[in-house]
Length: 52
Image (cartoon, rainbow, N blue to C red; front, top):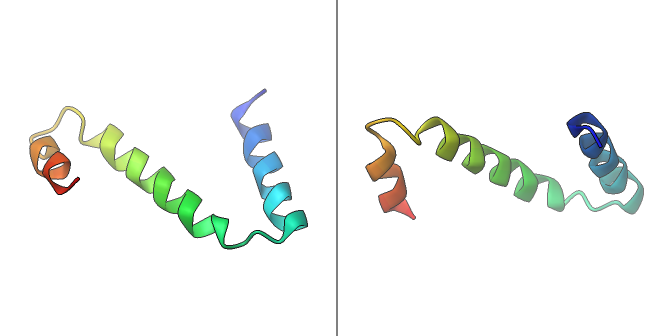
């Protein structure tokens, strides 16, 4: 399965089942994951990890 098909399947699930309250949670998790990936090797990493 490609990443695009997983995203489209998730979008269809949200649309058909009317689970729109899941969208902000998923967006937050994606942004948090992106933040951790971006700061993994930077000087900001100790400050980001201290928040959690």
